Structures are given as structure tokens and as C-alpha cells.
Image (cartoon, rainbow, N blue to C red):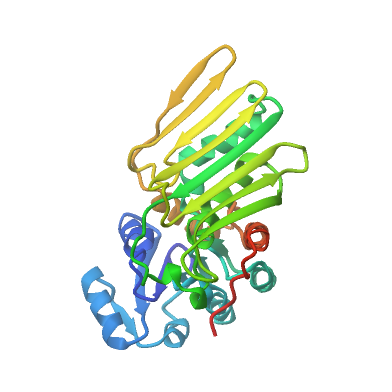
Length: 330
């Protein structure tokens, strides 16, 4: 591998076409060459639908395939850590869906293996690679808002199909895991530091499964924060992030999907501006960053070490809400 990244997909996940298959078709340096699923028939059906040449009847067989340089891991949350570690042992780079692992302890183990391997391991926070998020980071680092007072992030969308794996504790499900991991990541981006969780309150689907979660944060420099995640609550749909400083406010609507409608607004004491960005998909920018890291060693923000920090906050939110931490799936 010198100028091309051949990607294998672990599992016939619904997110895979948007996340890697379609972006790879327009890439000159990435190609999805193989897929594996829980059964050979399921993998073959998926491969036929999406034009993937190589089919494997097990994840182990895909990882042993010498024609695969890197794997995309969109398996259920509780299996992320196990199969990322297996991919590293097989010498493959990994693009792992969020949340990175079931909990912070598992994330630390995966990060240790990733750092020792010299391979690229990227957590798939696709929004972070779009010019919209890059611009948010630029504004926050510029100090134009003045000393921060408060940051907040919300990722709420309706998922009333309660048989969905996101409601399955045995697969490390929960609103904070699937929607809240984004909200926590955004709050950390805006806050510029690692926060302490002051309190959290969950709405439950079952004894251990949160269908919605709110948490309050405090950052070392003194500013506060809040995160809101929901798969099913009275807040049907809310995708936003905001930073409030002494000199003004930064607001972003729809930070997850800039290929659709989105808006960045900056209101300062003496001026207000609004910005929009192109329609190219967040996932395409993410794939660019992944291949640049694999082929050229280019640094990227959603590293395994960053994932440990994100999972640490998520664990703290679950503790503060009186819920058990998620655990890896056996």
C-alpha cells in the first residue's frame, strides 16, 4: 500500500453506505473492497447491492484478507472495542464508529494498543472534519468571544422503534451512547478543556437504558456547560451547539449534517455574521482525513486518546444519573 487504501467493512450496517461506500466512490485513494457479516448470505446480499467484490462469511476471515489495508467498524457499540483490537492485531488501520467503546476503561485499552501499533485508529465523528466544525474550532481558538461563560450541545432525534439495538443494554446502548457521544464531543470542542460532570438526569426506557439524558458540566477555567441527548422524549428534534462568552455568542444549527440545511451565527457586541458551507458530505471529509492519515501520516483530531477523554465524560454522566456503565458485549 503506497497510494491507495483498500477498506473492508465489518458488518452489513445501515450506516456503511453513507459513511464509507458512497464517499469511496468519489475518492481517488480509497476503495471498499470487502465486506463480512454474521453470515455469508447476508454479506453476499450486501455486497451485491453495493458493488463490493470480496465477501467473507466471518469477521476473522476479513481481517485475515491480505487485500484489505483498513477496516471500517460499524458494529454495535459493545463490539467496537473487541473488533478494533482484533483489527490492530491483524495489522489493519481502523475507522471505528462512535462511540469508540462501551466505556472509558475499554477505550484506554484500545488506545494503548493503537498507540503501540503505529496504525491509524480514528473515531468516526464525521462532523468534526467538515469545514463547518473546522470554522467553529477556529472561532473558539481565536478568543473573539472573550472569556467563556457557558457552552451547550444538543443531539435529539426520534427513534420510537424500541427493538432497535440502541435500546439494548447488552449491546452498550442508550441515548447518551448514540446521540450523547456527539453532544459531549461538541461540548468539549467548544469548552476547550475536559469538563467535570456536576449532575445528570435520565429518562428511562428500561432499568438500565436511557432514552434521553441531560447533564450539567463545569470546566476547569470556570465556565459551565450542558449536554442534551434524546432518542425518544418531548424534545423530538434538536441538533445544535452554542458557546456564550463575555463578548458574544456562537450558535450552530445542525452541526451533524452540513450537506443539508445548516447555519453558523456569530453575534458580537459590534457586529453579527452568518455563515453557510458547501453541501459536500461530512463523511467525504472524514474519509479524506482517514486516508491522509494512513497514506501520509497527517494528524487528525478524533484519535484514540481523544476517544478515551470522551468516554470518560460519558461514564461520569451515567454515574451521575445513577445508571450502570455500559459493558463490552461478550
